[in-house]
Amino acid sequence: MSPKFCSLLFILLVIISSFINPSQSRKYQKHKPCKRLVLYMHDVMFDGHNTANATDAIIANPTKLSSYKFGEFAVYDDPVTVDDNLLSPPVARAQGFYFYDMKTTYNAWLAVSLVFNSTEHKGTITFLGADMMDDATRDIPVVGGTGDFFMTRGIATVSTDLFQGASYFRLKMDVKLYECY
Amino acid sequence: MSPKFCSLLFILLVIISSFINPSQSRKYQKHKPCKRLVLYMHDVMFDGHNTANATDAIIANPTKLSSYKFGEFAVYDDPVTVDDNLLSPPVARAQGFYFYDMKTTYNAWLAVSLVFNSTEHKGTITFLGADMMDDATRDIPVVGGTGDFFMTRGIATVSTDLFQGASYFRLKMDVKLYECY
Amino acid sequence: MSPKFCSLLFILLVIISSFINPSQSRKYQKHKPCKRLVLYMHDVMFDGHNTANATDAIIANPTKLSSYKFGEFAVYDDPVTVDDNLLSPPVARAQGFYFYDMKTTYNAWLAVSLVFNSTEHKGTITFLGADMMDDATRDIPVVGGTGDFFMTRGIATVSTDLFQGASYFRLKMDVKLYECY
Image 1: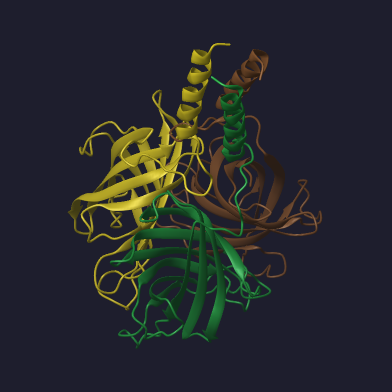
Image 2: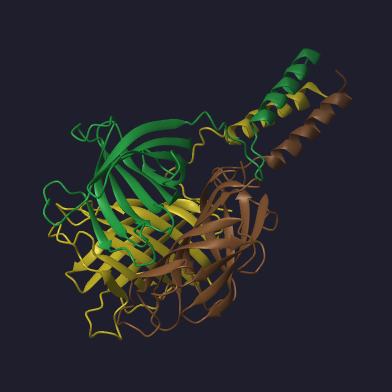
């Protein structure tokens, strides 16, 4: 074996070392997700009459603790599209719940499962946590996935793209997955 | 040190490389969980009279958005057994909530914490997300664990083993853990 | 290249091997979190009159299934402090929900997002799952984080530090993060 070959071995060793994840502090490239999906969910509130169009229903009314709907709890099954048009063909459903939980402003806590069942994607992505609605964009942790998104984790950056009082809102979701299997 | 030994070193290097997880795309053996538990949870609905037997109570009634219980919300503390017999000795409890969230069929979103406190297992496993009840089997992400299941992740494949109207259902849970610590 | 150098290579190889995480069974040092936060959340129940002080409101009343509040569901936005004094300056908010789910004792299922927005920390930590209130301390899995706590996982060990009937409780949270990015 030549000295050259041994040097090559050493270089290989250094390269491999740089790939290793020490268990206590793994560094991900925050700006380089392994998968990224930009999607819009369209939420049409049920008002007692719009059964055909509604996708979201309140199951607990707001409490008297504040005038910002503190305690209002809703569950939904919303269409998800790749652009911001409610009438575009849905590529997924968004299913879950949210509630308002702040006295001084509109603020929510939400859980969203994106359910894909198309030729392009099959499986689910679930994210949940505090949703500080006053911020233009909010990061929500992606805690798991199934199917094409088996065991995934990441961050969903959401923004309220449009808010039409108590009847309709549109949430832009920039889903960045940092663990792909 | 002989050239032979250096060659051996090189082979070792190659083998080790194959074990390394690059952070952006880790491959798990999808069909080889590090731990697997097949369990049944038994859910007896509270009807106002069966206090002794009931393990599940509705806390929000269905809305008028659909005839598929859209918005009905229930919380439960169900016995968990290793076979499908409600009267078998429980090996764990299943605690959590579920709600129905679809207009056109029965469809749920659920959160389950399996609570073990026996000589065999101590600790918890939590899975949650969309539960497409029309599918024979549904994958739900396992998002965390404690005790014997410290920091675990995986997939719970659930199926409605038996459904007796509004009084009883049995869920088969095939819990596959892919991260064991 | 000297035999000495080849020996060095071998030693390096051994060191690197010890850092590698085989994907099926990663070992963390359970007693050595990469980050640890000890915090207190203060929960003041809304009684219909204490709008100024209350931080928690019941949105679904207990069912008649038991006398241990089975089914009572509450949402909250609680101040979080570094010591056990309600009047200390808050370092975060705790936002989420909990409900009672046992017939024979007080037992809960809870979801907590710690929301930090100070010079010291910006971001969120979310933990959720079964909360066996009869145990002096309970481990709840940390399932995700954002901002300074990007992609984190771990265990929150909670204990009911003080419980004043239906008006106030204080939860001590020992949040141990084992995955830091």
